[in-house]
Length: 154
Image 1 (cartoon, rainbow, N blue to C red):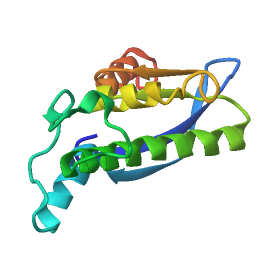
Image 2: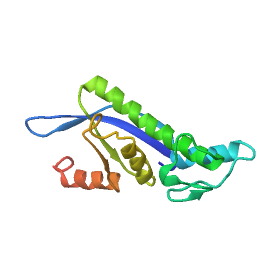
Image 3: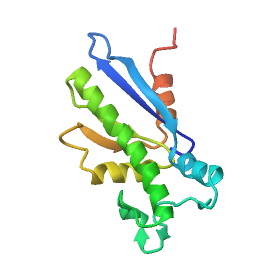
Image 4: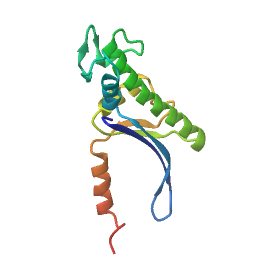
């Protein structure tokens, strides 16, 4: 979630021979770092330094930044964080309406821990999802599974 965030909705259909997955839809938006950087670049007098997880900005810790931030750095950080988590929540809600099933949320990438912590704090698990997970190196794990499947072997 540095440069871009992609949120994809997939559906798994059980099959007698093997499960098949289908792409339902998705969205692409600026990532956590890019959102913060763009404000520093495109506006005068706003801070150019990104706030990172665990940094202190004046008297608030980024571990508990409220959506009603009390200073500019925290407001920029909160804006980026709540934009991403809000988009995830909207996708979960829409997916639930369409499929009538609770989805899993799998988060990967450089800022996965920040996004996970906020979604977990917002109590997204349980009532709206089957689970919320961080999976490191998700693409590499997928390629490994693909290589070990019989998909490309004759």
